Length: 316
Image (cartoon, rainbow, N blue to C red; front, side):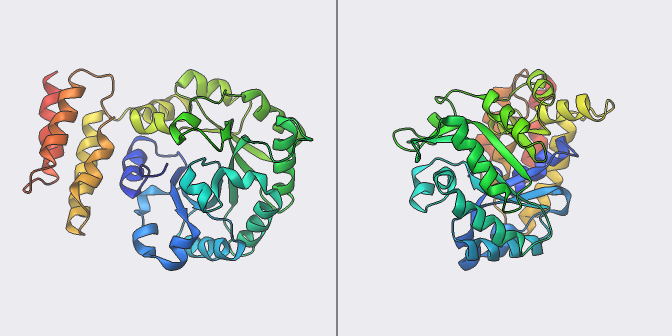
């Protein structure tokens, strides 16, 4: 998620879910080709398995970005064909690329030629306005997947909403277009040899269990950020019945990470902001968040701020 799942966020999420596949923010291929690559791509070894999500539409540039990402040790290279923001559309990538399946296939083919790790695609179930009026919504999705699969993509992460390319904000595009899990399920029948992961509107353990009956995996977005402890619950229920890290223990471990990153020059605010949802729904959570938000503005603040904050939630 743009501006959310940076390296600090991913480290925190890894403390909660040892086996989840984590995704970076979408990084543009142009930024990797011409920008500060260490700042964009460096990550902590504890984050594995972690996928690099790329945005772009130039096969050669994406091939370069994929090669660089694989060199940094990412476990998967993902091409974003699902983001509907105006900023992304102006660069001719994100969800609007679904209207150019042959270009997406060329990008996938070029990236696969450069890396040994999986190259995957994240997409919507469709886009509006539809570029082909001779197809219904599912026909458009089926043809897109089929074309890209011929280029060697074996794994698709499908956000089960269409992207409205004009008139809606990114937030509205996550809420207004109706969820159509049924269309995503039809892909499994038409492409039994491919792997499909479901995304969109999934917030609870019950929903995850239900969708895992039909899909190889599920992707959580905003819920995992706003209520990160849900990942610990999922890991316990799905993989390890003994897994039950306390929120306090997570804060203590994260504080040590923050201390190490501060020594490298990373700003405290950029790291502390990611823990704000950790006590979501718990007593004194609002007071705890306020303490962190106010405390991080002090020039003398350091990683001890996180440890001091625990007095508030422990008092509850």
